[in-house]
Image 1: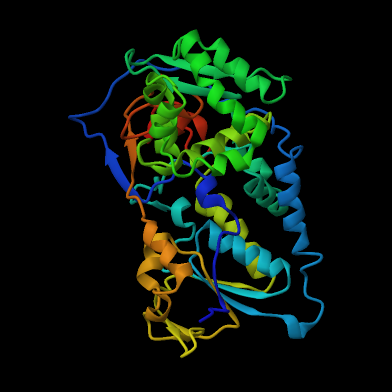
Image 2: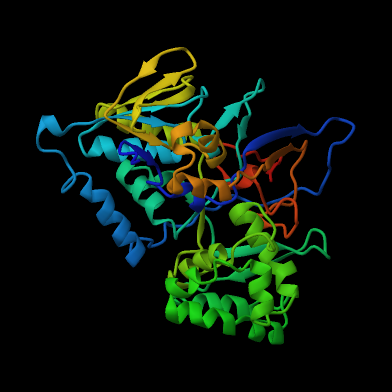
Length: 428
């Protein structure tokens, strides 16, 4: 049995790139009885010029793929035009629709909720404050996302921060330590120098113990990385004699930030893939914040682009069932409203836990879809905390090294739309 007209969308690859995402927003305001007071901060928001993210092989490949939808993949005959139903209006669904519309097809996005963005969606509460579904930053090493920003003409909506990684010192509350990337020094030497210059997190002998396992990654590349998929982060560390303290100092934060799970459950391939990208791109670890809420500043330009090119974006349109023919191909989508959606092609841009629930019975025994049995969604909370005065803040993303909440930022000093000279808003 072959399913010919159904695709699991990974067009943008943003769900894996946009680390620090969460699924369930938890809105907590400090009451008058529990307000947190701190010394005032004289910190002024400062943005840095956009780094050169285009001069990498990964970016050039992504750019070539993007351009192909307007050139080699562009339809030349109206008879080639396809009507494509896309289930899910997150970044993957919107990106899929964007590129299909660039190629001359007619994509129609069906989003179950009344807001676009999926894991980057956000809502305004009764006070007008934006409640985001997770703390989101953009690394220079995100070639697909950087291409989208370029093609939509919205690069100016990214607020680039100083090229640093900032870690909270657990044993010294209120103190931070940094990995500083010196301008002009190419990768991977800038990464190595940043580690060597930091004197607070790892001792010199611990740094020397950490290096040898990473050398095969640099030499052999992805083949070595893929071969580690059967090892968890913890198992990899022990196999190569890495110091246990690096788990507490670095890998817990990385595992939580990348996939929201502990190092003993996360494949080392995930961590090495990210590290390999960062180690090989001089500006790969430089970070940017979006200058405002994601629905207006990112999702709307994508939706506008799709609709301008003849596609459609439909919200409040949850799919109830994927109805199949006897041969396993799709007959139509049945919405909860009772409406039947018939298209030439169908694309799933849904989270894995929803895809598993939506699979038609005819597909559930197929080897391709049985692979989904090994995947599961991970519940994560996102916390917003409003304070009645200004905290001593950092204009950047901070790694907490907490086993519960891996990263946080004071959005009142990192994001233009949320800027407030008198009060702070932490997002964790």
